[in-house]
Image (tube, rainbow, N blue to C red; front, side, top):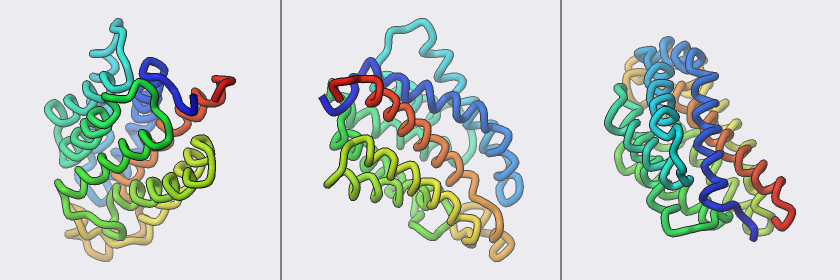
Length: 217
């Protein structure tokens, strides 16, 4: 089996909760420079509520993503709630029919998440948003999995997501509140791109750990 089970996959949600909780201050500090400064606060609220709602329950990856998506969509403020809520809702929807998460399913989940984000907003690569992290990460994953293993594709995703995140430092914001600053938005990382990198890295590293610890994979 070249993947991990739904029950094992709950580790992906747990890893994302940890990543956001550990970096909430960083995200708000970044957002405070060219945004309204609440990104880390709102994300931390949503992910912490998710952990609390799931505590003591027996849940799967899909169920965890459903709870996360609903909370981000309905219970936190800021512009990113609807985007991330819809993103994780799509990940849950695509994963629901798959007892095992393998590379094709993982790709389909991320691609569906990207599609809903681009449907809700107008951001494209180069606009200094989370899309600058997400698009190259998915492209690297899909390109690598054509000839490589699931693990190799995940490693490629991590590297590409970081490069995408870093690229936003030299970009001028074209979407959202930061776009009002024009050239003054150049020189700082986009908070959404950074949170997307944190989330993708957390998911991928958790997935790599699950694959590594299962000898038949």
